Image (spheres, rainbow, N blue to C red):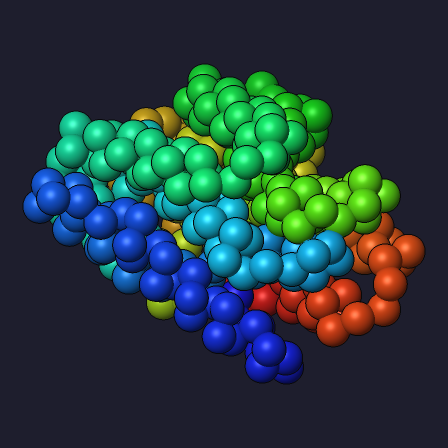
Length: 320
């Protein structure tokens, strides 16, 4: 996702967070250090740190403390990606080799654990119990989501409720936590904390649904991985759920199995890409996006609020 940085006042702070990230993940162990740096330099969007910064603008903004929160949320995200790639046996992320393909699954799992530990160490600088409580709850839900995703692979007997619960845990809660904890750490009012938490949750749901749509509609170059990878890996996303209402498509979808030759799935991926089910999924994403925007209506007008609106609209129109 490319956001046009209309407001230059954040650029310096984002650069500070980038420097903090490199310091936090540094290690005397060469493999852990190289793996962490590889992940940092793989082109992440840094959207979670941005949400921490913007949410903190609604309280007493202090970059020296807020940057630790921002770095923590990004490192947790990075750790979850490492574990995700092991589960999915992915060789590419954002068009670059994954940690598990560079080393092996065992190294990748320990690298992910290392990053989780470094995130918690970084967060220890923040002496606000509520912030730690919210972070702990989020990590717990992320872990539950990962287990559910493993359990549901190639399970074609799913419903919309299962899918929404899974993406809530996979994506939405960490974005929601970024907004809420950023507000908590800056001492923003409970009312503002609630607005920002809801904004992040609904936006996270929209973001993940768009990800699942783009898995079919974007090119391999834009995705950094082959189109239709989720379906090939047995992950049942919203476009697939809708496509299964067509009995002919459902039969083809249910014939996919672990280890199937990706080439044999390409015709099905093209069918789904050209179907009306993509538009149906997009409508759901747009509904969540509108809820996200409605959540911050009561926030005072400011550059930070304008930026939150700009990011939300960008997510709705993104191509990768």
